[in-house]
Image 1: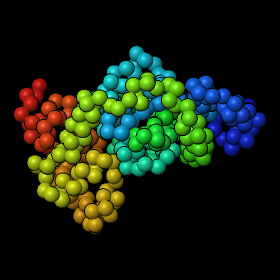
Image 2: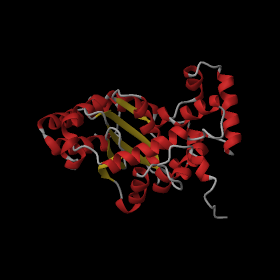
Image 3: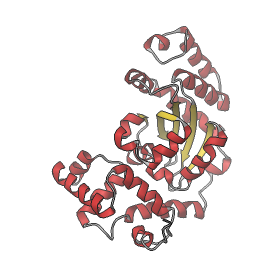
Image 4: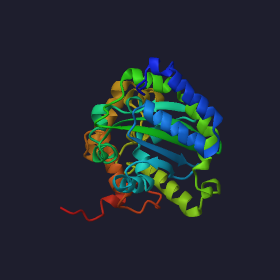
Length: 293
């Protein structure tokens, strides 16, 4: 039987035989078998396993990707780009184990104009992603990603529904096996430098726009930077959705942008050029940085 995610396949002796093999294995071999069976069932072209330790940025624990293509993206991601990753923003908002599709966490039209989409998807010929997110048991998170190339196409709604239904297999396997891939240093306390970089980046986000926006606009932009849609922002801030949209429009005008994607792009540009170690709105420094024409 062809390996693809369907009710027929999940009821087949082939799939259930793979589960039996998974149960029989231990350690690293067990996790590798999980990667193999899910990559095949999801028709995934790339697989990446990230560890987000508490209070520090991400580490790439394992990846099955074309290294020559991905290395720069991995470096950019670790150096701050993760703060605009919709999947990271989702796990930052919840400590629960989650199976999340790209469709769950972005507005497709807006997202496709973002720097993150261009660098993470377009530049590497990817079009869709399914992620399994879980606690590492130490205050941090594990994120297992299965991405599809343009040739494979996007996940269908039915595939996403089934991918979420089999999520307990991922959570149960990784909870006992992911550590066999990780560098032992990941289980030691993070270095002061690692903590400082993560804290500085988050402080830059926490102060972003403070010098230019009203107090209410600043509250709205802070929630936008954490990936919340405008209807949720309105509810959280106890305002009418129309009022929240007016604040968003004013924010865009003051920052000379026109979309959520441009907001994230501006944030990444800013933290890449200024001293993020200062406890102040990074836009104050950004205006002083010489620009190339």
